[in-house]
Image 1 (cartoon, rainbow, N blue to C red):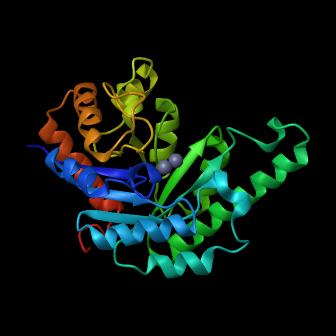
Image 2: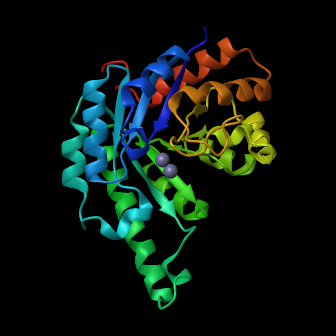
Length: 271
Ligand SMILES: [Zn+2]
Ligand SMILES: [Zn+2]
């Protein structure tokens, strides 16, 4: 059976609390060999690490999500340094820029609030990139409605840090700019959605060794589970569609995406 990795799973999400061993067992049965749990703040990163200690096939990424930027400490670098020392922390993140919902969309908030929010996101993102550069790690990047600023932030680090633009939902032109920086893209279940043709077109244009697969669970369940709680086992459904789009066998897709993940998250094989 061709095996795959779930390179982006929110295993510490309360939706999984009741039955995490079962969720991980179902992933193994479906051929999902490794699962990378993603932190969204310090507490969540510590939970992700604890799960990686508990389950041999689970790894962790430590960081602070941009949409929670305003609650973050001014300087996250000491905490990132400390968390990244763990042998199963395979990257930093998720970090990045998200301008989808700005403070000014709420009554009473102003453009100044937006500027402050964006400044804090940018500062945090930079701190992740700095620590990643210092430690020889890569970053899991969350980008929404902020492509230009995200590329500009990564650019000065591109010779030292690679990013994976996770939950990639932009077009082939954006993918090419990301790959040109030495970074990667990764695809979720939205690849399987009826209205996901633009994303399938972007995947069709992506070289076989420049992308990974993920669920972003508990969100974004692929067809035929769309709208339900997603879990790592469902990488399989996304892989089926990805192989069809790439015109390759599941075996070839498995080999390519797992090798890419091993290069990107280079502590995966040591852990
Ligand atoms: Zn994200
Ligand atoms: Zn995520």
